[in-house]
Length: 554
Image (cartoon, rainbow, N blue to C red; front, side):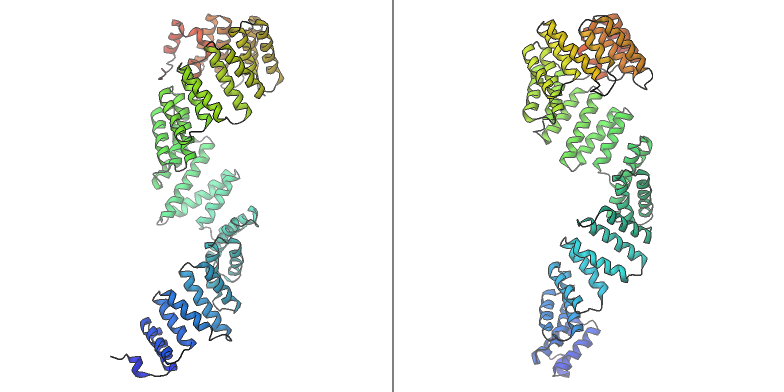
């Protein structure tokens, strides 16, 4: 059966007219049929154009592009037709995400003065950004801003141009923020621009301005139906707000914002990590912090973040004297980064306080073989290993380590320990005294940039100079009386110094004073080599009970 188009016309002009009629009725199959009949009579540009339109709306872009390409050759002298044909072919290449060829066609359409420039500018921006040529997109933002009168759209354009500039090295941060500010001026409801500016304020440490912008983003997004992207952004805003309050030590506000994050992003590892820190350090909530840290590790995406969270968990377990759990945490970090020397250093320390000395030495050796940061940290590790060797009567090994420590980073601590090596390990009192004197001079030199009265007293006590040690004990306690929170530490230092002098009564007296005024570094107190002479005394054990010092779990 013949179609109506075949019956009613036999010329290309008539078939092309029928194609237009079908197009006006959105009968795209009819467009294709009529245009094909026209081409069967005689090849012509108009029929290719009509058939291309039919194929376009049938989403057969490959055939449409083929017909437009053929049509172009028929309109070489007609600028407006060429402009429209190139624009049409560009649209289909754009839909196919063939952005490089779409860009070429849109540029050709502009060269022929295409009428719908706004559409071409918008699609050129999208295509250039799709191929990551953000610099080439910027001039088209400029062109759109010249002709756009709607302030909401102007805001979107300023925001888009700012993002494009941020990807292109020719523009400064000032240029980018200028566009962000213009976007917000044009539309105070532009949550994207407010979010970017708030993030920039955070980077610049302008926290009050950041809070204001993030509060606006929250107000805007909470007041509308939310896309998935909106919920993610809300979670981020609440997280940043919480972090700002956290850093400002407004912990209750920080907690409230962290809890709001979890409404929108219940698997946010960073929130659980921050909550773990608050519960551990501020609330002293052992179970709550432990749970939050472990939840954070489960949800954190980056290996480096998981490893850092394991270290925070390790420090938390140590602070609560759960050394068995601290070992599990450091092993977790090692599983992520098995070649991190610092983690083996931490593991060695745990073995040391557990009195598993051979395992401690293995871990210290592993740490040094893998490498430890800068000179000061390597010096500290050599010092720690040297002190362990001295405690197990390896005086020569201790001597070598302490000398290495001094060579890397001379300090009061390693000169004092070198004195201990010569005094207790080698019984060479002249050499011991010489190094104690160096340690004393180091405290006076000001290199450590802090009051070093306690260090001077320690060195004097090690030399047996009771008079000097007691004089400096009095000085350090007087000095600490005017400093908030300092007295507890200085009472503890006094206890250690008196223990070194062999005055058990005074050592216990000052140890109790330290506990009375809030000394809480129980990990140090329970493993302090200077207090070792007290550990078996019933009076010492009574103090632990009286002041409810937690029992460590190894």
